[in-house]
Image 1 (cartoon, one colour):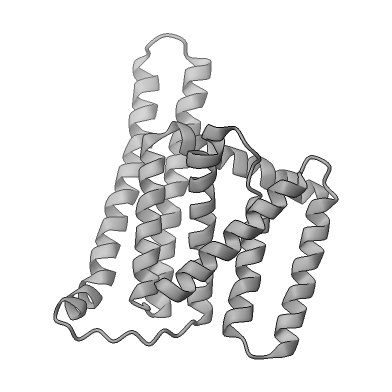
Image 2 (image 1 turned 90 degrees about the vertical axis):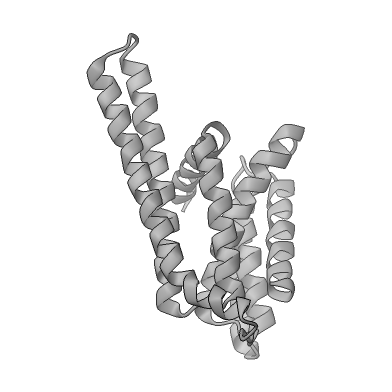
Length: 227
């Protein structure tokens, strides 16, 4: 478990670095957040939500690979070199292609819902399905990183624990949407176990876990009641 948590920590640090240093990555994050909000609001079908989440993930992954390639080239090549330029340009092209594909998917997926909404025929059912729950968790994931990098880092305060935020979000969704007491109790038990594992890690502060739990709960409640 400790090895897995450390792997998660290193991956999170890499994602945070890319967000804080790459302007395009920040744009992709905000675009992804907006698209996921629209996906929840329009209550897209399961297959369309899968397409939306796939292209968001694809663009972010391409930007991460592009950043890794750029930093590797900067480390190994001190002077300008035509092959180094080609490598950077090709990596940037991969990001561009994925971004164009994401825009095309977005236009196809949201065209009819937006058209119905403009015509005043859209009726929201306010149903929270399992797929919407996963979208909410994805939204909490993106928002937590954005808030950490834009607000908490500037104040040089305690870090927000991402796993704690996702844990609190999942627990909140279950409590709000599930009427089965056994399911709620089991979810609470699993959440407590996860928090216990986090508390056992010496490098993770209690305040960091607390901030993550509060943020995950607040974001989920906001999404649940206002979107």
